[in-house]
Amino acid sequence: MSFDLLLKGGVLPDGTQADIAITDGKIAAVEANISAEAGETIDVSGQLVSPPFVDPHFHLDATLSYGTPRINASGTLLEGIALWSELKPIQTVEEIEKRAIDYCDWAASMGLLAIRTHVDTSDEDGMKGVEALLSVRDKVKDYVDLQLVAFPQDGLYRAPAAKDCTIRALDMGVDVVGGIPHFERTMEDGRRSVTELCEIAEKRGLMVDLHCDESDDPLSRHIEQLVYETQRLGLQGRVAGSHLTSMHSMDNYYVSKLLPLMAEAQVAAISNPLINITLQGRHDTYPKRRGLTRVPEMIKHGIRVGFGQDCVLDPWYSLGTADMLDVAFMGLHVAQMTSPADMTHCFNMVTRENAAIMGLEGYGLKKGATASLVVLDAGGPVEAVRLRAQRLLVVAKGKVIARREKSPMTLSIPGRPESVDRRF
Ligand code: FE2
Image (tube, rainbow, N blue to C red):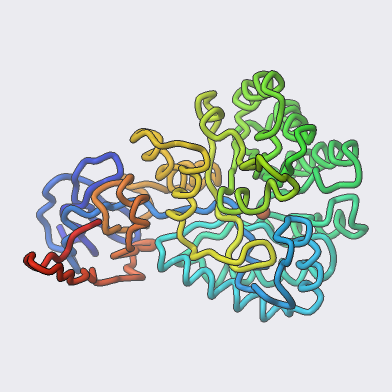
């Protein structure tokens, strides 16, 4: 028997060692000591072999635009939204498409092979992004799976054309229904928007992912309505609330009622640690709130929680490297998830948990799955997070798309022999 590709001696995220055989874009076997011919055999002994990184929350229509037309001086979410409104009219479909493809190539080099991206559907300017990202979704489909969310950034009711544009985007083939209830004019408008958006998703058989309660206001409780509508409309397992930062500041008694309802409705949560720790708490003096939602508490209640990246070099965030290990690293710190089991779970959040939230089919290192994976210069998940380990190999749908030679530093400490190839 001959395989296309054979990886020998890798360490899987659960700590077991196995060879992985790949044929026709699928994983043909995951077993110890596979001895067979292969088009290429690669020794990955002692290296972590993981299913690819997955980002369930991103904004590809804004990425890599940092500084255009100016930077966000206050660093707040609201100035970011205002700045985005200055950028939208002056950017072209071609510019958005080029930046998005540049980002996808960068992501692929980091082993990030599936991205859920929101795309602004507030107005005609936003629709340039819809046109661009539908084209990009097709152009990158052999190496990155893109899932698009119709996102009326300026409010479904607050922006006059948002509802029409959002429906039009879904008609054009955008995959998921988005929204932003806390940005509507009133709490009541926010509540109504949740109901209407969930009804649209139910009629079309789509998933829902709302920017929900991205605020330090403890009374921003649109997650409650999202959970209610999920139950009422039978959308269990297809709905996610992104950010949920107000939960950080909510009354504990109220949260003790809310979390079991989220679990019952199988509403997932997507926390965005890099952005939440940067944007939230900006109106506080001291003490300053962290603004991250209650990640470990939700996990304890059986709620699926993912970590997203949200932004890279755009009106809201001036840094970022398409590295989901940076996201896990920040999330681990801010959520204080520092036990070995919790740290391992943080790695799993940026891989398999995010994949489950996006409903990715054929994900994982098992026979019959899509042959997409990343080899990391680390001995296990915790070490990968600690080092934000280098990607040595990226395989997308059966093809090697990125390779990197290990580049050990030569360290010369006076009085000691040379030390090389050591993970610090
Ligand atoms: Fe976002």
